[in-house]
Amino acid sequence: MDNERTPRHIIRMMVELMAPNAREIVCDPACGTPGFLVSVAEYLQELKDSDGNYILNAPGNREHFNKDMFHGFDFDATMLRIGSMNLMLHGIEDPKIEARDSLSQDHANIKEAFTLILANPPFKGSVEKSNIAKDLTKEVNTTKTELLFLALLLRLLKIGGRAAVIVPDGVLFGSSTAHKKVRQMLVDNHKLDGVISMPSGVFKPYAGVSTAVLIFTKTGAGGTDWVWFYDMTADGLSLDDKRQPVQQNDIPDLLQRWHSRVAPDVAVKDGSYKGLPLLDQNEETPKVERGGKAFFVPKDEIQANGYDLSINRYKEVEYAEVEYEAPKLILQKLRDLAGRTAVQFNVNAQQISRVEIPLPPIALQEQFINFYIRTLKCLENYDNGEKATNKLFNSLLHRAFRGEL
Image (cartoon, rainbow, N blue to C red; front, side):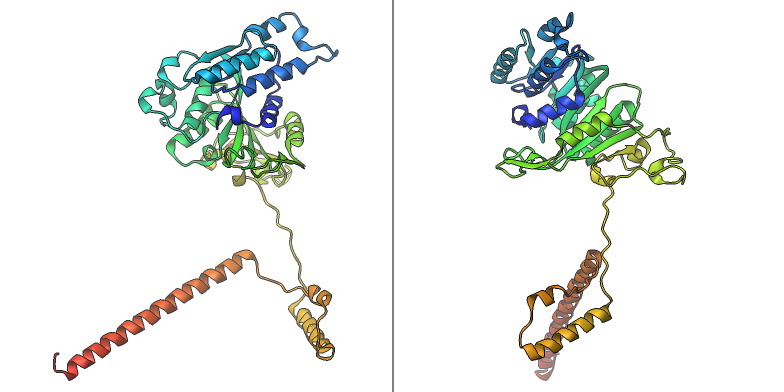
């Protein structure tokens, strides 16, 4: 997905999730126009300290903001010019927007340079393997851009640096060796902080692909204990091609929950589920609910699921129990209704609407349909076999009468 097509409110959401400070060194390695860097600048220009003073007015902050904070890479010359102009128009005197193919071997020298990365790298693309930086293919052997960019972000970040990146859903559950390796790196070697599932219409009308935001911290020594998941189903705009304003909007709730989240105070040990509240093995430990918008999942469970990060793997769906009247009572109501209609010669629609006819569960209905289809196929095969047998018998009989056998 091109950066310039990222909705502005999604960019702002990601900036507010990361809450950058005045001394950050920010980078977008696929910057485009560049929306993320502009949004960081706007966020910091509005930010005040506890005394109500703008933080950029503190000693040294304005100079850092103008000269050293903002970095962006792109290989499109037009985007480089637009990006530089856009940042200068937003009050940044000397943004570092450079002509670089971030994944190429020619630019593999940039390492551990940034404290914050915000990105929406290209989706569903591939790169010629001979052009990819060797240190990236060493980490993850693939040509898929969405996986290579995750390895690139880890290379670019300083230790303790943070990243928020938009990825297609396939990155979360892909079964290839490369997909699993990238997820394992984030969970085992660094600190995966959060996974935010977004609805598929967020990038319409440009694309309908389902996406998620991965938030992680580079540590180089692990640190993932609990991963925070959020199920975002609405972003304040309709999820069709028109993208008109609607009332449903999860973004304010998402931001509030993210900044107030508290991970369960339970130690997580690799390879051991004992004592985890999620599994409810210890009656004294309350179970962590997973039916709402936001919940935590322990590292152990993610490892046991092949590092699958899709929210549907872990979210619990509660089904409301439906109670029906006894069949005898329903039949009696039908008899009473039939008795009345024999005199009235018509049926009252309200009377019919009050009659509830219980149906078996969906799973049982599907079993019945599948059994019915298989039965029809068996009967069809039987009929075809019987016809073929009769045809063969008649042919042999005729030949026998003609003395041909």
